Length: 311
Image 1 (tube, helix red, strand yellow):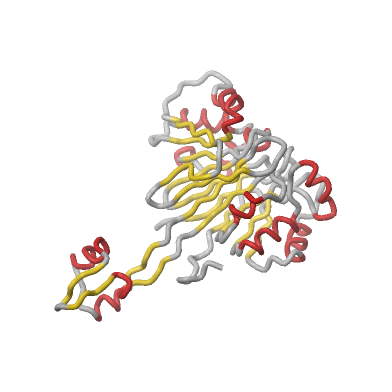
Image 2 (spheres, one colour):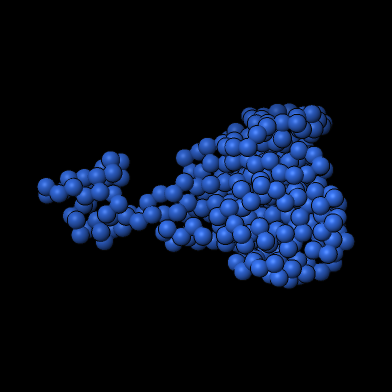
């Protein structure tokens, strides 16, 4: 059975606190794992969350501030120590190549795993698989930063009752799926007649940024959006100055983009009431499912949208 869920490893911005580790997020997607922004302490948080090095297939770094990347050295070395049996690919801003190299080779270790490197220098797809396309979009932060978006292509779901009505069974089902049509008793039956649209799912990961076109493009039509909300709305001036979002801004983006489940994270240590982020998100008009992330939270992707419903 396929599993699609977000495992939250850390939720603090800038510095860890007693209750919040530096950033770290693993997206489980049908047997693959994408690790986003491994901050300091990610390797230990993986242990606490039941995440193994073998679960990681891709690593996506939004930018090279320490709370989003200092754990990269330990994660890479753990992948090699555990001799992960599949290739792993790392994505990161091309302008931060020197930081990636320093973290990759921060200390001595024996390389046993093929680690691919994919520097990101512009908007667009960075990986294409049969199951999804991984895209990157430029954000607005004092250092170059990219958000990431995973898009599953739309497909079709075969309806057995309609197949039976038209007398299609056995190998003919596969032929119909491959060719799009089939002649049965002198009549052409199309795939559309015996199936319904299966909308693909969408996930986006948006970290340190001001409001910008990239934020909206990443969030558009997402089933699950993970987005920073470093500040509360009363500190919007600080958010703009330092290149961050407030809870209300993040929620407004989600409402405008038709996001089904919003996950707020990356909280400043200045705040001690997490529920205030939820209150401000609701006040900004977001009515979908809402999670104020805590370390080690697991968030399943919502069930698929009904056919032709893309918000």
